[in-house]
Each structure stands twice: as C-alpha cells, then as structure tokens.
Image 1 (cartoon, rainbow, N blue to C red):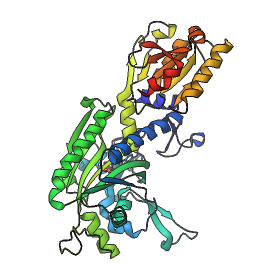
Image 2 (image 1 turned 120 degrees about the vertical axis):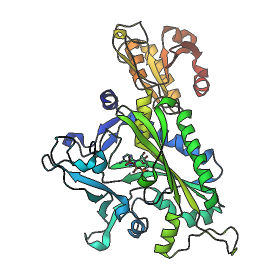
Image 3 (image 1 turned 90 degrees about the horizontal axis):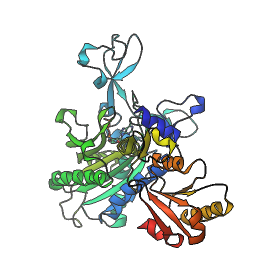
Length: 439
Ligand code: ATP
C-alpha cells in the first residue's frame, strides 16, 4: 500500500489536495498521469455500456438538484445515515461497523477508550444556493449520480423513443460526508461514479440482475484484472440499503483486505414510484398508448467508483522484480517496478528516446518521431539519463512501447520498438510506426 501511494505521488498519478496548505481531509488531486488513467477507465466503461449495447443511452445531469429529490429518494431520513460512535478519550469518530469485535462493548479501536452510544449521522453534504444562507436556498451535493437519471427517466424515454427494457448510463461526481474516510483514495468524501440504470419489467428484474452482474465481472476480466483478486459478495437481507431488494458487491483484494469496488442493486420500483408520489408526475411506463397496463419499471443498477476501480487497477498492475528484468544496466541491481496496466488503460502508450542527447541529428530525428506520434497516441519524449534508466522510468508508469532512435536510424530511417511486457525489441521503419502501434 505504501509503495503504491508513494509511486502515485512520485510519478504524478495522485497528489494530496491543497498539499501546500497541509492537505485537506480525504481529498486528492489526479496528476498528469492520474488524469489519463482516469479518463481511460471512464472511456472503457462508457464504450462498454454505450457502444457494446444497442439499448443504453448516456446522460450528464447536474450535481445540484431540487432538495425535494433527496426527500423523495429517502436520503434525508435514516435511510442514508451511518451509525457513529465517538471515543470519550481520544475523540476519534468511527462507524459503528468499524469497531472491533462486539460493537456493543464500546471500546475505541485506536486507544481502547470508552465509546459513546451510537447515533445516526447523515452523509449528505449540505450547501447553499444563492446569496442568502437561509433555509429556502439550502440543498445538497448529490450523494449518488442515479437520482438525476430517475428525474430524467421520462425526458430520455420520450425524446429517444425508447421501449423497455433500456438503460441510462452516467459518469459524474458524488459527495458523501463520510465519518471515517481512509485507505488513500478508497473512501473519500468527493468521488466519481459510473452508474448504469436498467429499466425493465418487474418479473424480469431477477434475470437481468444476473445478466448485469456477469457483464460487469467480464469488464474487469477483459481489462486484465487477476481473477484471483476479484470476488462477489451477496449482501445479506438485513444489511440491504433502504431501496434494495437484492445487492451483490464486486470486491477486490486490496492490500488492506477484500473491499467493495462495485455494487449491483435491484432497486425495485422504489425510485420511480417515490418520485411519482412526491413530484406528482406520472412516471409509469405504458407498453402501448392507454393500454391500461402501465406499471413502474423495476431498476437494476450497476454502480462503480472511478477512483476505487482506478485504485484496484493500480494495485493489480503493480509488479516488483528483484534484481531487475534486464541485467544490462547498473540499475538492474535495484528493485525494478513495472505497471502491467492493460493497453487501453495505460496512461502513456509510447515514449520516444534518443539513444544519446549530444548528437544533434539523433535528437532532431527523435523529436520528429515524437511529433509524428503525439496526435495519435499519448506519447512522451525523454532524453535524460542512460537508456536503461529511461526504460525503467517508463516501465514504472506502464508505458506500452519505448521507441529508441539510434545511430542506425539516421541511415535506415527506422527505430527500435520495445514491448513493455516481453521486453522484445524490433526494428520498424518510421513511416510504418503509426500503423504498427495501432495494431
Ligand atoms: P461503502 O459500503 O464502501 O460505503 P456503498 O455500499 O455505500 O459503499 P454504493 O452506495 O453502493 O456504495 O456506491 C457504489 C460505488 O460508489 C461503490 O462501490 C464505490 O465504488 C463508490 N463509492 C461509494 N462511496 C465512496 C466513497 N466514499 N469513496 C469512493 N468511492 C465510493
């Protein structure tokens, strides 16, 4: 875990937010490589949902919504509250389910002090809209992206002329005033979700649940996640969220243990029926005009955190080789780190390296290659340090291909291209490079 946090900072994946002011709570910023990785994960998820299926469309709803939404959804009542206990000695606060052993023994897991009785703590983040901080302008930063989908259910269905079953996919920020954010970017107060809401006939909901669970597991497998590090967990009935009829968590084996990265939920008709009741808008689906058989569609939701899945992908890709994979440089004696990220997730696809930096023609040619590739692939140019060091720097961030311009390149107009995983090198004509990399 420490190694991954340190690599993330050192190589520009993830920085603590407002670091020059000592950081801020559990907030993190994604650096130049982090934002590429994040965008690649989002693109992969979006393509999986929208391009792979005929019957899923996208949406981008606003973060701020009419506060009545949160009343209807049940978020302002006990439904969206964690039980909180506080240590009378060190004053740290914990979720009741985090206290070790029997929670009713009320012993602080940090200092052994006595804990207070549990009380409900709502996770919604309050904010004020408009110039006056009075009640009329009070609302919340959304705690989940899906409510914007439910309030737009009719808009989307009518404008795109969709018939049930269909899905609406959305990626966006969500905010929760977590009692105990922890484990780097695993649990934060601001995070991003990728959610898909699947609207279907009530009697088909259970079948679709299994279908979507399988689809979601396959997404991780297709992106190269080690099967041994992924498992599912059927949430027991008594632990289900207020809206859920069934929930299965997809869990990843993090360095700190098995933890949820995605939830698949059968939300029944909770959302559409409650929004109908509270808004007065009829959100039933009628199979054909005035059939007399209108019903509230049931919803199967797949919900994954961008940040949590990114963390899982990073942990899964992290590899260490003692003594190095290459024995050709002095640095090979050190511990070699490489990130075996899937090709579609790797933040940098190619790095262009002039063999030496004191030979003007080689540098000129290398820069030409770099500028040729850059519009097509995320490409870096690196001329500092020995070639062995530069390969290792690129391996450490998961760069797929290192392209070296050497003395032969000046005569033959070609380069060597080195594969990250096999470390095999091939000579390729510069004019064929784009096609070769695409392939
Ligand atoms: P947890 O039990 O970990 O609090 P949850 O069951 O409340 O999570 P959901 O409401 O099902 O989570 O949210 C769906 C997904 O959103 C989670 O699987 C996770 O990937 C992401 N997520 C939820 N809360 C956070 C958070 N505080 N920080 C980062 N990601 C989060």
